[in-house]
Image (cartoon, rainbow, N blue to C red; front, side, top):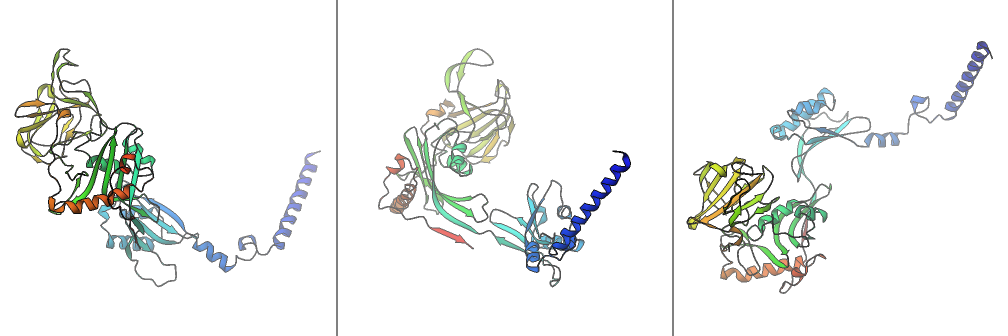
Length: 438
């Protein structure tokens, strides 16, 4: 077939395709106007127009509000109105890099609402009216996110870390930190927890209708069964109206000293000894403290309230902080990578005094922690730490009533440990009360 014949066949085929397309379009006049037919019915057009489309406008480091809104490519008047509305209702200096505005548009790309979540409970909202509505200045309002608050038991068995175990039952690791704070005088969460330990918390939990992560309020009760020994704690107002935690027999959980200068992520690499082979000097000599192996930068806390009497460099101890406490006690924190207190400074129990390091005579990052009384070094692991107080006699009956109610609520959880089920709940407790916010 020559070139002329092939060209003629091509022209005939194109003519046939064009005729078919024309016949198809004339047979379906209801296709959108862009294809030659009638526009869609008004009801369908309205439904398409009202379909929301959400655009996230992230706040980057160094952004101004105007720079964020500029990325939305809005009309100048709309952008200016939103800018003014936000600035009139919120201090834009508090906008946080890493958070986002959310712009709601219609399917026709018309802006309808701008939102920014201020915190877990509140959202800043600005409604944008449709074109043709009364041209009023845009107004911002703070709207509370609908939520439900309930007092609920959370129970789990330790598998791996405390954080992991709480996450596996669908709760936030925040609860692990708060539980460690409650039992900080009885349990060293660096060394004491063992796989198979069981624990429960009775906590105020707030759930949100928009399905954002839950938040937590007060912890009313906590139990931790460590290798068969039960530790329990119940919140109760002391004689001065301050909430504190007490064990089931009414003794305060708070002691003069915390059980550890580190909260988490540490193991004891060397214990108190009168004859230890020094890892650097290679000679046997007393080691009158406890070594906690932990990554450089791990926060170090003072185990008791007191006054910093030394903060500086001291030979083999490297960066050293020494704190003087009441009744002739002193504690020392050695090999710090950074000191965060000054001599003469008064600090409270749990105050962060420095960061773990490897300064001085050290083979790796760790904290050498020592305690002495009237100049004599003591084995901190074996110290019997006295309690600060007990429930006053005149409030004992009220405490027992509250404790029994909390126990009964803990026992409602299907994973409550045998130790919790064995606790006496008195006359029983009440069903958790649920309250809602509109």
